[in-house]
Image (tube, helix red, strand yellow):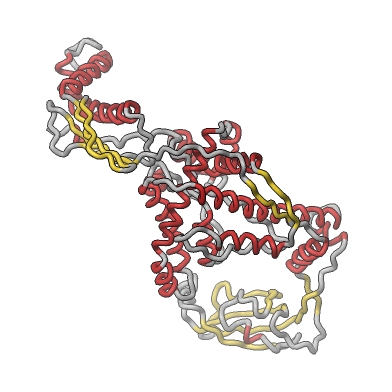
Length: 536
């Protein structure tokens, strides 16, 4: 096998590999000897079919298999002999002019990981900003839950229904005097202004009183699911039984028991723990950003542009989705287009930080245990439909890059925790607003040219806290996003969420390094298509 280096510029490497025809022929002969004992052919005893007939029967397939194996072995040998650490999947091209019986030539182009000297972990100074949970915040959280537990009481019969009131009604719908299926109900509750009935229905009930009879006319929307009703005018004969107003929920032991808890104290304890977890997440975010900014300011080395391209594409797709959901999509797109270079700088920062954290972790023996990985896989599998979980598990078991990408956030968190333990940490008690301001200040202080967006607002008090900020880009290493997506089983459709603000996306893109473990496993070369290898 002959290897010739064709490119050596920065982190980019290129090679031309020639596989002699005699090596291919020898490998084919070896394969023929392996399969000959299993070949069956009329007129010959089992295992006694001549090699030339075996080769005639299976020559094309054997040749394609051998050539692919030779290519794979050549690329693996190249990585091993040249001590190459690929940043992403190498681009392997098989010569178009190859003919059976001649030498095979292929080209290998790749980017390698930079040689990074693991920085010293001594002398890191961080400030831990903590926020105590107050009784007032717990009270507010309890009140928020009580506000979601609506109860109703009957209003006086003279009460006219208004926005926010509930009416108990019978209704019968008809089109051109003919009742239609699904258009009738008895003692149905309807909250005026809730927007749960077709447009115009609730509004026409404003002002009704208990005992009233009323006929209203509404138009079904053009996109109404029942096609026979879509776009048509309908009349509804309505009888009002009651007008009800919201009743204030008493916060007492019965209230807690109705939520499935033993006591009000237990509810308050759970909510306090939830708030502490939320605030602890903000504290960690502030510390982590201090740490990442310190690392970023102290290191500036070349990074593989393929990794930057993949990371930028991930950021850009997210921003485009958010721009499409903006009130002014065209204006939002123009805004992000004007800052495209800044987002590329953000992608480069994320990749550099990811490589740096990976180097620190490897130099200090940080590892994700098999037990931790198993728990991670089990948790991730729950995101898929039951019928697709086995496919997901198989993907992680057989695809090293998919496994590395799944492991990356946990690995990075462990490296960050390691650095926290090594750092000199001073603790200071602050208010929630002061902690938020500190996070935003750290964002705004990031080194140019990457611009900073306002921090993503924290979860509402009393709500479940967001997961801890992760610092992982999914496409930083390994198979391309397209390859990974093609392999993965379909996920369950997530519940619809409100479109996130651009500022929040910008924050995420800015702060989180792409820490996929770049050298978790040497990527395999792409195989040459069988039909090309077998071409005569």
